[in-house]
Amino acid sequence: MITDRSTLVSHNPADPTDVLVSLPAPGAFAAADAVERARAAQPGWLRAGATARSAALGAVAAALEAAADELAALAVREVGKPLTEARAEIARTVAIWRYYAQAPFEPTGSVHETAAGPGLLLNRRRPHGVAGLVTPWNFPFAIPSWKAAPALAVGNTVVLKPAPEATACAQRLAEIVRQALPDHVFAVLPGGATEGNALVSAADVVSFTGSTPVGRAVVRAATARGIPAQAEMGGLNAAIVLPDADIGQAAAHIAAAVAGFAGQKCTATSRIIAVGAALDPLREALSEAFRAVRVGDPADPGTVCGPLVHESARERVVEAWQGLPALAGATVPTTPGWYAAPTLVEKVPPGHRLLNEEVFGPVAALLPADDLAHAVRITNSVPYGLVTSVHTADLDAALYGLDLVDTGMIRINAPSTGVDFHLPFGGAKQSGHGPREQGRAALEFYTSSRTYTLAPAGAAT
View 1 (cartoon, helix red, strand yellow):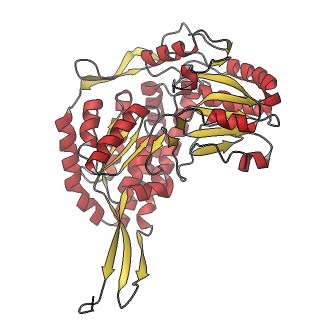
View 2 (view 1 turned 180 degrees about the vertical axis):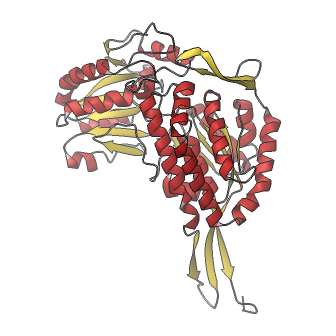
View 3 (view 1 turned 135 degrees about the horizontal axis):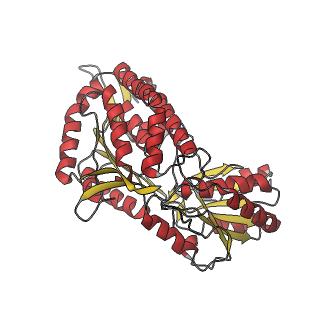
């Protein structure tokens, strides 16, 4: 967080007395300086060629893999990520850098015949220049990596502004990345809103992940400057359970998607829609699954639900369940740290914040639906559209009954959480703006298309 005195402080959410970072916020001028240094370094980085860029990204992957245990422990300590999830995030981060290490050798365009006469037409994609990346704290290594690696692969330089709560992770990531790259090709800019706004005002392309209000402000600022912008924002994700589903498996998947990492994922499940006769058995199975979730020290490999990232986050979660009938949870452990028990509520009245706002914690509402069409209407009734999970044995329902669900991703017989980094990732409505992230979609976002006409000297025009 940023204090009133413009001091950046990062606490351990499992032990708030443990301070990882305390430093002065660098300010707007530092952001402008970082961008200018990156802009000066960009032509050399591009002209070094595909082999150099590929080797550099591959070296980053190898260095991250070598430091995996250290990095996982740092994520546990700084953002309270359970150890098992932290290890998985580092493994995914390594895979992301390895995947994009091959991208410099991919085709960057195409060749076409002219409509008439001699000559050729070339379509070629070129980097924008400096990529300004604004990232959240909940995936402190993976999200900066899935933005930075494709940007670097195609010849951009990068300035990363991480969330204050993940400053130590970002600084350690930068130390590893900079060892493999030329000076100023990758920079980290600690700070808060001041630094983030300054970065958006100076970069040549912007990618943001965070809350919807801030993301919309970033998009407006970038659009006003005429630069490409990409924003991945909030979610209010639903899990639809049909009567023919494996109820036990569905309950296990949903409990993990609600409570894993204390629900602090944009893909976490927050609404559970039971269709028809699924309601009663699902209520019982979910209640048991929620109560079985292990809450505690994120450094314990058996922990599923660790602490919320800070005290105000826990207060927001507790306020969300107040006054609602609880099937499980709705308690705050007395241990030190910002913990809240995974909570399942029902009989939520229309208009309640749980049905309209992203709480970003381990709490979900169980809702009944008459049939699949009704479940789809409930799913679509919120302003967000990131991901929907569907639990059913009916292939027709999975492939065709969900055509009207307006979310960017649909996961069938799987938790709503989980990302395949080699495929496009993103949402609809207020969950996302601009082109998708990850996979080849990212390579296209970090480049612009140019068309060249090559006519022979002296040819008639």
